[in-house]
Amino acid sequence: MVIFPIVIVVSAVLYIYYKVAILKNNDVLTQKYFNGKARVCLGTFLLFFGVNQYIFYKTQLALFICFIIALVGALQLYRGFMEAKHYRSEWRRLNPNE
Image (tube, rainbow, N blue to C red; front, top):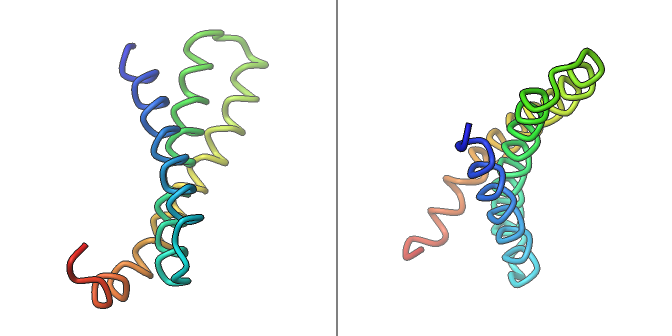
């Protein structure tokens, strides 16, 4: 089960990367696009963190808490994916070199 910690760390690093990229940018469209990508990374982090913690503890209380964390992560992942998809085409049209 080495894959869960790797995905957790990579998604946390990418989340921080996109949030810093939002602060460095003044274009509102780019900020919203990067915010959608950051939300996908946050959702991935929460989803895999919840599953990883349940695998580690395996108790009924951990199941309940980890289910809530994983559910919030899945919702963030879905919303971020839809948000990034919404702004992706317009962002690509305005930024063809990136």
